[in-house]
Length: 85
Image (tube, rainbow, N blue to C red; front, side, top):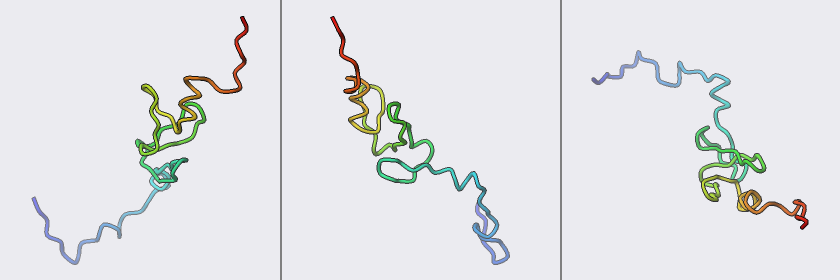
């Protein structure tokens, strides 16, 4: 079904107002700075940075913000204490 536009009808932007929730829906990627939809952003389990689907670094079945975070999860960091025999 089609409706014909007439001059007495309001345009889309005239009656719509943004709520504060709609203004804060986008989350910026901490890596590239892109404003993303909520489902496009994930949080790194190591450093807690937000990263988008374009900046993701996959190691195994997990997502990380960078290679350094992915390697830190699997291989540990330099802060780990050496194992004594």
